[in-house]
Length: 446
Ligand code: ADQ
Image (tube, rainbow, N blue to C red):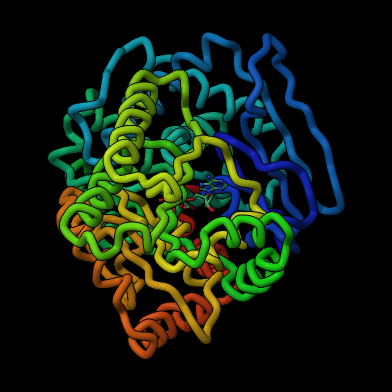
């Protein structure tokens, strides 16, 4: 089998097994398990060093490059986080465009291409990940790369009229013509992207490949984690109350303020639940160098303080709030202990937490998933209670329904979603993408 070359902004630690944090690396873990592969990307460090650091464990090689602090500011903080992220999540009101950042972003993509090229073999299959690296395939082709190149977009793609707000959007779309197959999370994303490409006369095929998880392995790990001392101590601290659980990167796409306001509405409109539930929201700080993220943190700190101030009893804290990351082996245990998962992004490519919650639940007494219509996962999770995440009242009503839901209905809903997750198999997503890429017409090399 040909070697697989993965290129992504960040690269997960070089380990042969064991779970890793972060949506993209979690998703890719299964893809790279047995195959010979090279993973190329940014080390996460800034320095003036140019040469990649190359290391190998078993059949996995990784090549990491440092960014200079200027590259980091223009490419990562600037163009990726201040512009593309909000734009792709339908929030162009938050997007800040600066031409110097666009140029810095292109320069880093060109540098990725130049430094990756000498590491390539003729029969490699190249798989590029996410919006950070939109123009990379075009630069690789410019330098003469003739390998098959796939691209996967982990985040949503908005309707073409929204995307057109981006200066030089047309040039970016034409760059995607260098790719042999593009994958998206949902049919909507694929349709939007295909329409935008068609308007520029670009014919790259776009297919739908929803990211999944290894449901059976996650279920086993969660069952083990639930027996650990820290999970047990946490479960005891709930004092028999129902646990509502939210866990996200601290990001404005995740709908956190609306979510805690929804919980406050529950306590106000359904006072019978006061003292009977605890809501734990974990949201580790992410992209702290971006102003919007700092503002969100302040807003959340204030909101949580106000809600607790209003509803707490001397022996009951309604809302537990932590901005510290939860170790992955513990997280599975918390997801198992939770009675309700509150997953309410305003926009999300997929959302793996929704899938992890379903996988972690005990089949004999499963909890309820409350899920935003605007997460890619909503297309697949038919058993979830769906909400419009913009409406705190609707979130409160969904919480009341979930708290009161009879066991038989919980089982029925959970079974529907778990079976679907498990049916995809441990590496269904990457396998189906790579198989399709293999079949894709090899237009670029003729
Ligand atoms: P993310 O935006 O990072 O991913 P998500 O899909 O939910 O979002 O993945 C987050 C991962 O990190 C999950 O595996 C979760 O368990 C873990 N995680 C989240 N909060 C954590 C915490 N407090 N402590 C420890 N672990 C935590 C991007 C896209 C998504 C898409 C994925 C994969 O934005 O829409 O689903 O890529 O394609």
